[in-house]
Length: 109
Image (tube, rainbow, N blue to C red; front, side, top):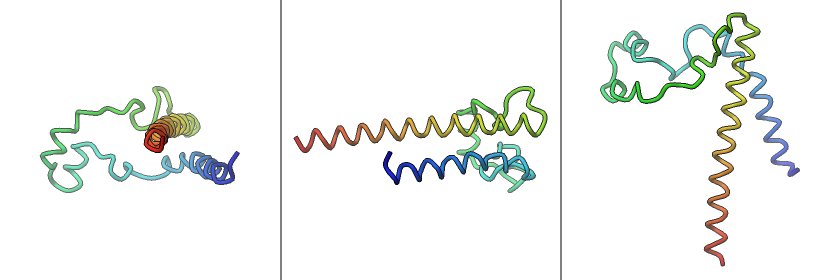
């Protein structure tokens, strides 16, 4: 395995291990506000936000699964969400890289 790729994977694994730190923070994560929370925070909801707020619903709302009520079970749910997100993001980047590489090979031929 390439040294750079190996180091990158180690960094990603460390970041995934640190994921449950979010459970210790009070309130919601920056930028993950609902329209109601935004109304309370700044006093209004931008028109575009109101129109698009119902467009996407997270598959794992609040990075949790039903029945995760202890810190340990919530941590496991956070790990699951992190691993799914990392795999999905990695797959998307891999496919984009393959498409770009194929396109560059076709142009050089």
